[in-house]
Amino acid sequence: MNIESLDAARLQDRLEGLAELLADTVDGGASVGFLAPLDRGEAAAWWRERSAAVAAGRLAVWVAHEEPGGVLGTVSLALPDKPNSTHRAELVKLMVHRAARGRGLGRRLLTVAEEAAVARGVTLLHLDTETGSPAEHLYRSSGWTPVGAVPDYAADPGGVLRPTTIYYKRPGAGPAPAGAG
Image (cartoon, rainbow, N blue to C red; front, side, top):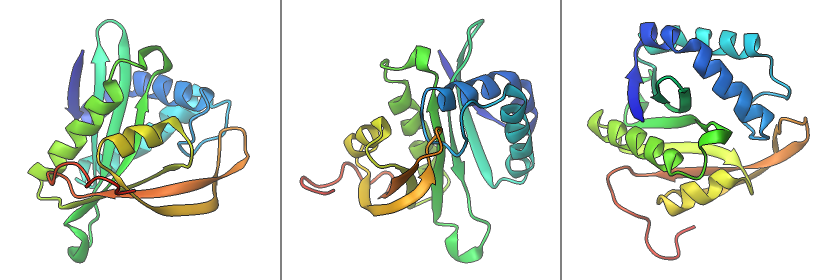
């Protein structure tokens, strides 16, 4: 399995696989901003719209794939364009296809994004995830610190409002101290 960074052209090359991954993630119940069932065309259009941000350097995208199997996972870093926030980035859209779960791919993608953040000089990462979701275990066990939960922050794929927990991490600083979170 390979993990590659995508520029805008490679994102277009991987569009079909990314759309399938997004639809599979939503159909599997993960709260990533869409309601189920997610049409593949709508998923492809969403990814297509990310191309401009990738080309402008405001979004970094990595994809895990194997040939001929296609896209198995992805993660992105949203990079602010304001002068007072270039030290931070938001980890967004960490997704692993249901057929590839349980093999450590989510952790590998998370590590790739964190290492890339350090290489870019990012000293603070943040993210949000549905409270009580399987993703929370990954983030907590990877040294992310919960800030708190916001009730009824986002609808899950079924349309039910759920709380969201906000996390942060200082990449490259090592694991959080015992008892943190």
